[in-house]
Image 1 (cartoon, helix red, strand yellow):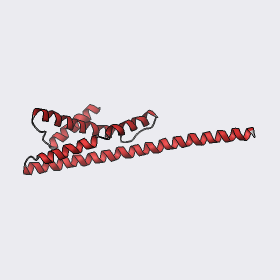
Image 2: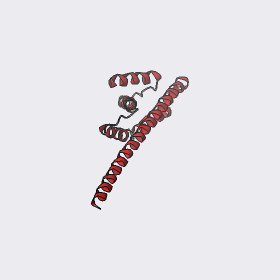
Image 3: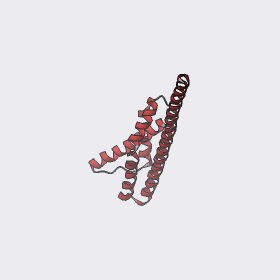
Image 4: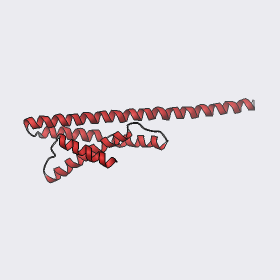
Length: 146
């Protein structure tokens, strides 16, 4: 009986360990999916910003459009800290997280945009939602990442 108990105990420990590793791996894949979802949402915000730029170029500055695009960036950034924390935990557990660097770049671009908005609002001049500004922010944040 003692030998059977030892073997059973050993098998249960192996099973428990395998299930924990499996659940970590599944959570890691879920994390990657969430990062990709965030990146895709960020790309849509940039597309919306470019559409707003074209609209304002044709019709003139619109505070409502400006505020809408700014709010999209703010809403997008809200869950980013939790997403980053989850990804960093997986990295700490020796997992390689796909999309992490691109997600970080997206975060930096959104933060840079909002920092420019906040700075300009303090100065009393709104940031113009232009493709040029978007490209300049992208170049700046990509350079900072290197």
